[in-house]
Image (cartoon, chains in turn orange, brown):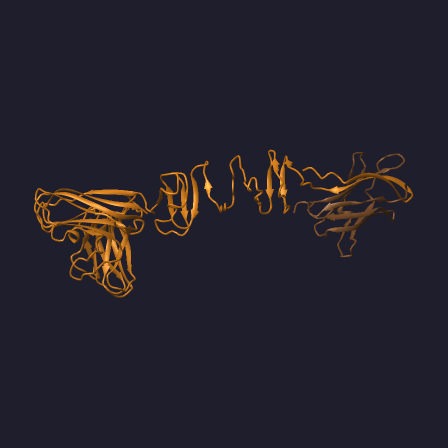
Length: 393
Length: 117
């Protein structure tokens, strides 16, 4: 930085202790703000006011240990021009809008931008007083202040399809998972086996308890299998019935193959429904059911035909002492929608479609989807497909 | 005229980031550089209005350097205006050599308003 020109540069003669000396004196300021400042290195500003001063650096930089204020000078309006990349380690606080390549911009404000904010196609508007589905707007058409579309917060729509199970007899058949319950409840005070030896169930063991003590422990033993394909014989898992309320649901983290044994191994007797459950959990990922469709061709006329889509979860169960437990209320059920006109007609196609649902499923937890197809006549179905529409997350 | 202190009138502005006096010493007869490293200097400025604005710079805060002759012959006195009022000050520079104190410079320092308000 060039110093101010020294105000005085003079030579005097002074005497000190009888000796005469020439003294060349220069007196003046160290700073000069009167013109442009050209810097080859760094300019460090510790609070000095540089207003009205152009600052040019050559292969150097400017370090400002304080706020950098670019005031409106009436010509450049306080603009900051950056010819190269700008690296900002901290936050960037923009009171105005951000324009990208002189076209699309990022704007913000209260209320809808439609009819208000002029912008180029591709611009974004962040509404600071919006709600779900009215917070982010995209300028999709036009060059004026219209053409804004609100973006609805929704994941990508995905589908999962299953062939409908066919049965030669009247039956409740499952796809995407299954329930298999003991036909009545038990205290399991004595060991009770469930399933058939060597059966490839690959299902969780589950209980639905009546009300009672909170010290009961039910041990499930048998051969377990993991999703990684690891099979462990003589494995066990203890289910602790810690909720005293009726209709409380418990299931093992482990999945079981072959026959398992349920046995109360500690605490007070407490009657339970028990069985297996297996559900589709989207590879252990959370998802939201938004709709579904079913299409089938009937092989026989069946007035009792039904399709039930269950949200498998730990709540909503009903304990039944003398029968199987009742699963949670279905997400969709054909007979609920179609009521009387629900029959599968021999040789005829039929269809069922649902939209507008928003049923979150915690696939990362112990939740999933189970679809049951109920027939009350032999060979009621000739063929059929069920499709679930869901979004991730 | 030998035996007199030099006139040290100067001025500055409140927003100057620094102000300094630089004195280079030489023997008046031979022109050779004078070693001032053992000399003790003291600078002082006092506000003429009596408002109490004062600034003092002790020898330790000054810089003694070589003007190019291989001898420490240049004295630089940094002066800070940060705490001073605008106005006129009387200033003087004294040097102590061999126990003898001599005033070698005196004059007026005027601090003017900021040039960039």
